[in-house]
Image (cartoon, rainbow, N blue to C red; front, side, top):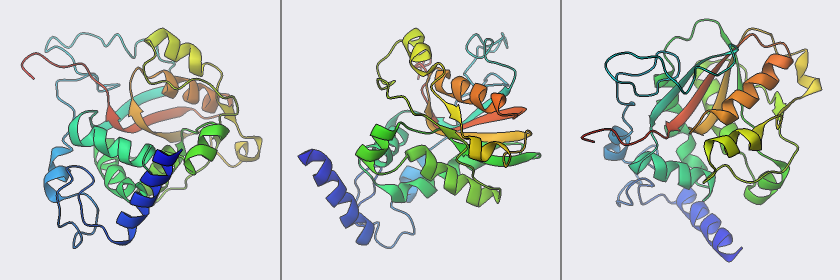
Length: 245
């Protein structure tokens, strides 16, 4: 608890008087419009290619079908991520999600929008919800902050169309099968939003894509409420180390 309070006080101090880059810790960022220095913003590079056309998972040059997204439901039409979950990107996720440095959200969301690609037909942004317990613990939902920024840049409405009422173990450190079981039927479409959410194309926002289990479960809940197409958009993607990397 003391560590959490200390990190929040530190975050509030940097919010008022930002002096260090949240990515590298370098000093002199006070004059910058964001708490991330230019060098770190450059390091938020795109995922390596070639990659799967549907989910962007790095692929061999042969262009073989992607085993990861082959089992995804048709409603989840594509997944896009701004960068690889490593280095500066991993630190920014940590700063936002666990340390409460909410001012990094616009930087992360800007990179996400650039990675989105085709935007025609997108009509809603929906954040992946957290559980009530984690919301009380952190005071905010990182995916919700990112979704608000993505919606602002895209100029399309943000809809809190999903809830996650059941508490469950964190996904971090779980095997792919445990991850899938952990989020199966975890998300519920909010009845108050069903009529307002058009059954067309939703941008589903989260911070990190690992196996895709969370995105699949959330997309299936959206489909049950009438949504026809879902694009999963995350800031970072966990990918294995590539040969020579």
